[in-house]
Image (tube, rainbow, N blue to C red; front, top):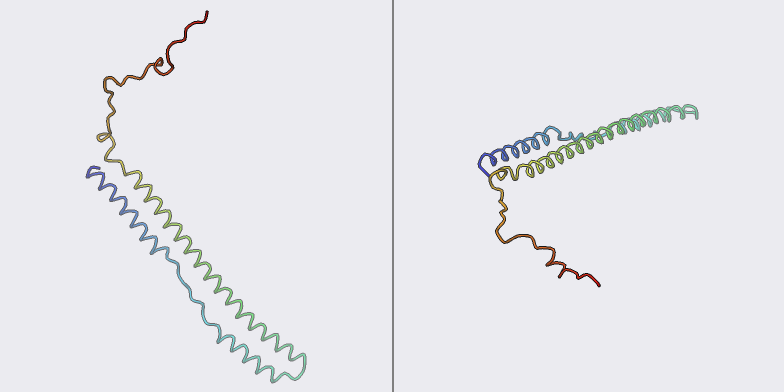
Length: 150
């Protein structure tokens, strides 16, 4: 392989390496951390205890329980939204992997396509026929000619 083709091949591999580094940095998934909801849960249960002490009848206790259920469901819904955000970050990671695999495949194709560039045209082996390498005649393969039957 001549020097010019080596440089072309090297430049191509450098381009693929830079593309891999850039895609690794740019497509890096953001890792959101789930916030601690224990303070919200403690506040909802504290409010429930306070309100339950002032409830003297069954209908008042049902109202207090409804308020507590509402507060706890709000915390649960917020937690579910946080989990969806973390799942989306996971899909960003799979997109990053797909891009890196694509770059690797393209680099392999580049390597295969440029492997023989310096040999095209000048370094091909020439096949020459030497005298005496004529193909064998058919008689040598089939035996003597058949004699006509009488």
